[in-house]
Image (cartoon, helix red, strand yellow):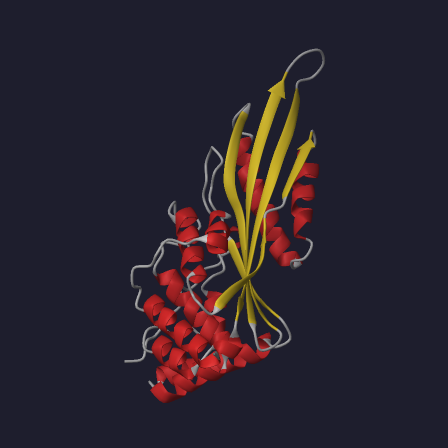
Length: 295
């Protein structure tokens, strides 16, 4: 039975790598993909992404990735295959990298108006990878109403207590940018993709990929009457969380051979190329090298 299952997964993976036409998503896959659909009115764009590595094996994945980069540079085909076959972390980043090449999703260009649809296309691509299974799919919504602008900003940012302080500051900056756009209008509503948080966890044999995307619907109302005019700020925060676990026990050398012939992306390269530059500090970023394929 295991052999039959492996062969079925391998056949589906070959089709995915070759980018053959696929049937529409259905069932849990369709529901997970629909999670990221923009349905609100107003302006919608992806304003930034932070990609981080977690888990006590993350540093090991990074070390292996450096060996992989050297093997790519030296065109050591067998060594590349060996690494992808035995190291699921760098296999996963290669799969994610290949998926992204088929979309317009570009975290290094947050002003790209194709990013919102591109991110949905990216999610669809990885949902089609047969070695991933959905282990979490949530959509919490939080509403705030404040007359104090600073208080509202801080409360929304507090939703991200689980991320690093540096990442929290990026979230706050995104909120501020949207709020400034909103407050330039009166009695209007704006929608913006506030933030995309990607994480890759390596704590055991399986690799966990978590995608967290947050939309903010923000409204400023201005009224006048007796006394000073008063502004009120309302915001609704929708957080979409999708967690996919890569089944390392079902990953085979044959699958690694197929992947290596098409696209390879090391652990650190994936992290570096999928975090939006902090332009507020006027730092210049390098776009990095493209994924290399084994001829």
